[in-house]
Length: 165
Image (cartoon, rainbow, N blue to C red; front, top):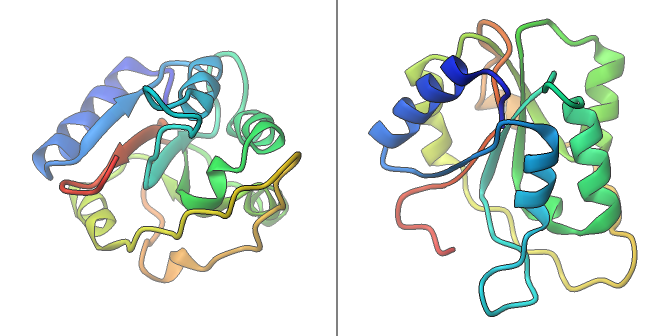
């Protein structure tokens, strides 16, 4: 999920090269719609294993996307969320984003070596069905296997090759 065309294309090419299934968004509103959209013939939202979410989208921030989706569905409980930014985010901002479900933070430009590490992430368990507002996740330390990189990046949701939809 990134509002910058060039960034989306570069990341898409890297993910395609690693045989990931990719869904792209160009705005925060599109990201919210994608993450809350139901699977065809189901009451469950589409399943993604990883989301690369740009910190600054044209119409809102990554925090706004996470907050809106968190308030309306529990889908984020089972997704590795990586915030990508051209800027170094402060520890306070990172803490807020972790409380909303972000697992780690990358800076642009993202390198192919980092994209390759995504394949080694084990899928998070699906959350049990809940009514009303979903609980906030406790911070998770994916940063040990996902080192921060260059600058800010867009959000791209994808499923690793062979993962169930």
